[in-house]
Image 1 (cartoon, rainbow, N blue to C red):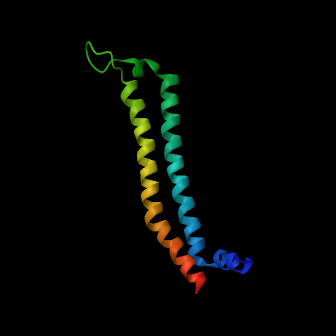
Image 2: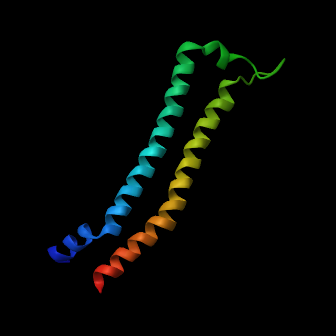
Length: 103
């Protein structure tokens, strides 16, 4: 591809919209992930007894197990949300930009 095609893509308002949307969305999901993980670490640091409390009388599973599993599951869910939007809206915008530049 020539430099002019790259310049056309960079100047396309749809490309700028794509970059802006994708960046905002990925930073939002990253912030959510960071808050969840930091909250878990703070909970471990300041209230480990709460996490170490069994879920019920006579049970060996503590509160920390479902909280930790929930944290891991949330990472998968956030990844899935990003993938769905990337494969839908972001790919559609990319295809529009490419078809506009090829014309």
